[in-house]
Amino acid sequence: MRTLFEKEPVYVIDTCSLNEFLQGDRKYPKDIFKTLWEKIYPMILSGEIISHEEVRLEIQDGGIKECVDWINELDHKKMFKSYEYQEEGKIISQIGAKYPVFLHQKKLKPFHADPWLVAQAKNRKLIIITEENYDKGKIPDVCKFMGVECINVLGLIKKNSWVL
Image 1 (tube, one colour):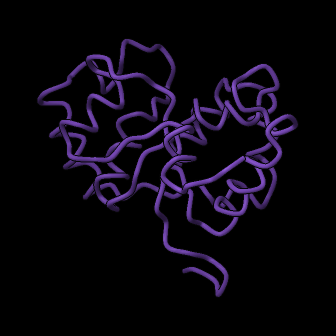
Image 2 (tube, rainbow, N blue to C red; image 1 turned 135 degrees about the vertical axis):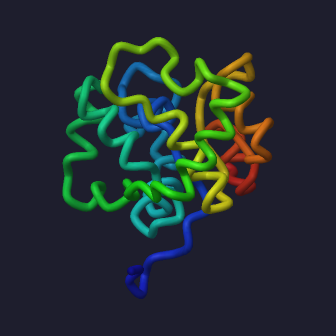
């Protein structure tokens, strides 16, 4: 249940995009791109930008320290939404029929958020924010197949007409 100050989700963010803000040696570290962070962070707190529980688990299982520390803060845990197994499962089955490798990507880790992220976006009619490039079997390619809008951080800046 949303509180008075929470908004409807519009975006769902991938691990790699969170890393871009939270890791100091990435493209958009929050200590350098303060204006950008000042625009994005309220969207996270208000629920306009969410992510999937599987992203939280993926980060917890081996993410960068800055990201792990950040998501463990109480205010940030609520951005990670739980599984909607029935709806998301159907979508993941559709994805797997065309992109079977996308479901596991030959990763030996117990968590792989990408299929869940696409399913969450499709199910909730959200826009995915990811830094992955259009390549066969990557999030943007699968999003195109599934009819899900997919942007990167620069796309988010443009979509919101931010001048930084």
